[in-house]
Amino acid sequence: MAEADSRPSNFIRQIIDKDIQQGLHTQIQTRFPPEPNGYLHLGHAKSICLNFGIAQEYQGQCNLRFDDTNPEKEDIDYVHSIQQDVSWLGFQWQGNVRYSSNYFDELHGFALELINKGLAYVDFSSQEIMRELRGSLTRPGTNSPYRDTSVAENLSLFEKMRLGEFKEGECLLRAKIDMTSSFMCMRDPALYRVRFAHHHQTGDKWCIYPMYDFTHCISDAIEGITHSLCTLEFQDNRRLYDWVISHISIQAIPRQYEFSRLNLEYTVLSKRKLIQLVEEQLVNGWDDPRMPTVAGLRRRGYTADSIREFCKRIGVTKIDNMVEMSMLEACIREQLNSEAPRAMAVLEPLKIVIENYQDEPQWLTAANHPSDETMGTRQVPFSKELFIEIEDFKEEANKKFKRLVLGKEVRLRNAYVIKAERVEKDAQGNITTVYCSYDKDTLGKDPADGRKVKGVIHWVSVAHGQGAEIRLYDRLFTVPNPGAAENLIDCINPESLLVKQGVVEPSLVTVPISAPIQFERTGYFCKDPDSSAQKLVFNRTVGLRDTWAKVNPS
RNA sequence: UGGGGUAUAGCCAAGUGGUAAGGCAACGGGUUUUGAUCCCGUCAUCGUUGGUUCGAGUCCAGCUACCCCAGCCA
Image (tube, rainbow, N blue to C red; front, side, top):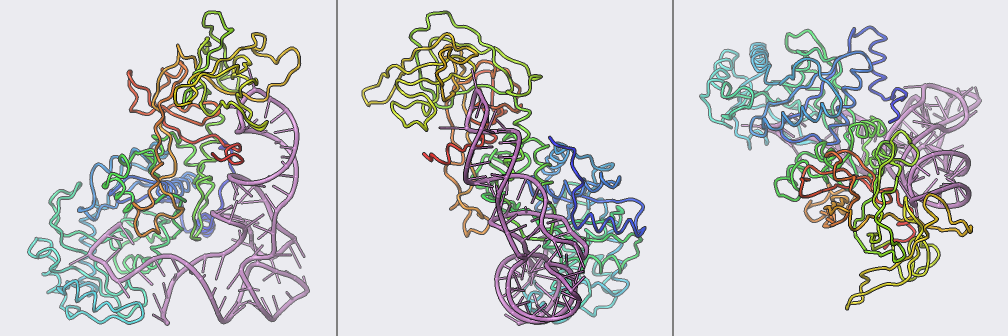
């Protein structure tokens, strides 16, 4: 892939350039901070490419940090899959994997500092009361009756929280900021809540867990993060991020910058909705090839290169966006066009018999790539009985149809020119066999008499072909923006997965799992992990660009 | 009706006061034993109104549209 790329330009890099120019930093430090509550998807890939990409470019470092402050939603399986996906995408984090939970002791200490400064208090208001006192977007909030509890009392209360003396929901630690702020997140936000939950990293050590807004900025500061990059919905939270950092005793001053999250047509990129798809079994797990997850795309046949290229092409801005699927597809097609060896496979077989071919089967030589000779050749068996695609034959057709037509000629890819002589049909009138003749002087050359053969079709020898299950994927949803729909299930595309029982040339039996391959005239495929010695299974990664389908929709 | 943000082509996106990059898509044409690839060509005055300036996508003001915020989620 064209990696000889010019350095991407975006507003974040411009900020960093300026910071460096002003001598603010000697080294750039970023972080990728997923919550381990699901698999990584393309939206995360965008963030990963941004954060790790910036670190690479500026000779800095990027940390991988699990933002694991909510044990009820998180799971160790996710921390494993996330590490695997980041590595697969081609990035290496600095040192060990970090966890926000690594800092629970320090976080606790900073909470005590805020209490001691009279900037945090324990509130026993019910959730309903608290919501009422918070006010609304246009109406200021009202101070809680617990707001003026003494420091000593708060210290004691918070310690009791930590010791498990209060029930979940009974109380929480809040920052004392401003109940009239126009930033809702500044109206005395929660800092710690009580949760008697087992944590995948800290076990049962804690029964109080810090909130995101309190944790993230401090974790950034502890790790020496210089530029903390997140998505647009955290813009308001930046005020709280800065407030926390400036009211505790910590040296580093990380700065938060926000960019717009990725939206892709005909899919969803929200962890909540992806979890729904998996849990309600609308797809076959997180790595279902229809999923926009890194695991799903990988199984589908997308390469890490192509995903990185995609992230480069979509850019980084603060503009709400909806990227077309064609952008993603162009990235994988570009790479696979140059790298995938070619082969022949018939998805919906129709038998043809070449009546004047009386020889034994012969092995023809076929190029593995039309323009890259270094990819070599392979042998393809040719015999009297072959399979071609059902859609590649018509009894009659206009001249625009460049395939096999009764009484006309067509080129068999890598082989001879044949002519359809007659058809055989079953009782229902379906064509069962097409009888043909071949021109034995057309192997590797045009007919000597100068007649032109317009079309080329692919084929597989009946006797040598191997049966294969071929899975064709289409968009998961029927609407461009399923995320905006009332009900996700209503817009699931019932034809997002079509299974064909096809036949493939023998060379495909031995291709490794997940290696890319182009089925000529059909698309790019890869062998699925479901394949076994008894059963071949191929996934279609993406079809070939098809201008014929556009002028001739079936 | 409060606050925070954003508006450049069908989509993504450069542009940082000097006369609108690039990619995707689309549409023409050429090559082709993949209706693929490849090659050539076509495709915008910058949400809107006004102002400043010799000169405005870039600066200023008003207007409009869209997104985010009232979790003990992140």
